[in-house]
Length: 293
Image 1 (cartoon, rainbow, N blue to C red):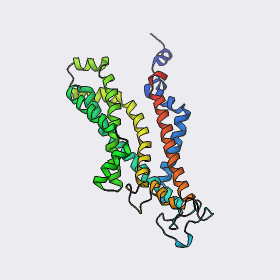
Image 2: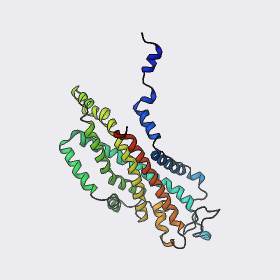
Image 3: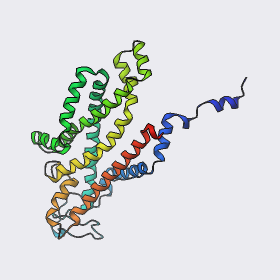
Image 4: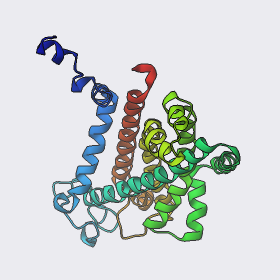
């Protein structure tokens, strides 16, 4: 009989499980951790905005129009005397809500369509690939503009428009991953044992094809924030008085010489959030890349 110590030594440790290895690999990624910290800072700031914002973001103060940064207004005030810091904090809520909703809708819909196309192949795949290729010939913001023109401006319309424009990217990634997974031995074994297609897809194919979809989702959120800000800049995104960074940029265009801070601070907020999301996506990509394991 083997000793208890030998038996314990042969048992797999938690650190040796695939999930633990992926977690430790991500934690070891400096790029991914920097991106995660930046994104978490934005999430915390957005969640605590009602408590840490020094002023009401929509409070007009005509006695302090375009006031420069000071002790009372750390980032100054805009053309209506509204506190820029407060509006940036509440604008983080808008941008993150838009990004998370777009990613959620596009990921669920795109993964479902890509999985069906990649698993069943045939005419279903041909139709999906054709529609996806047609939609991807146009930039995301152009597709979103066309949809918003029909639906009208507003937060919900902006989310739906960007999500529809983003779905083809997720479809391509999900289909490509499913095409690889469906040919693996464990999927073929389940099929030969008489398992239903629905069971194979839910229990075997989708869980093993999610890694590239997760990476795409993190990068897609950065694109959603940028497109949302672009639509807001054009006046077709979130409707006022809701604080939104792209709209704040547009409002400060006429004051670039006299009060550049009206546009500079919202622009920096967009830059750092998008940078953090891209760094997070790079970290996730390196973590799930089998060539670097």
